[in-house]
Length: 190
Image (tube, rainbow, N blue to C red; front, side, top):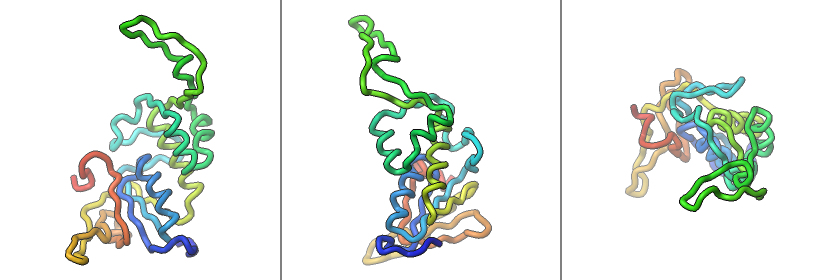
């Protein structure tokens, strides 16, 4: 467990889902929680980008636009260089792409609209590498399924206060905050 700082006022947060969104959320939460636990159903690659069953579009080419690049670089400094080093390609939308419309071919010109093109697997892998290098108080339990939420009544409201998993050493994880970033629908209950 990382040393306590004045800004880390809560004990533990649990993030269900270790994809791009889940790791981004975990990165932000680590500033307020002493410990962040990310639970991912798939086994995550640590040596090279690999397809995951939980991300069916992971082999498709994706374009990471400027705002996404800026946000990921702010959360994970070095992300863009890491992605390019792994094989992502920068391209100018106005100069490097052609488009045919009802009015004919669009003109091509140099612009500042530079996108990053790569498979989802590569983008995820670059983010994951930066995540592990930057986060000392985060734990990722991959190959682990969330079976159910631990809930309690507080002030007449039901709230999640942890998760039950199939992990042999972490079957019950209590938390101050639980967030589901597992994607569309509640897949962790399948």
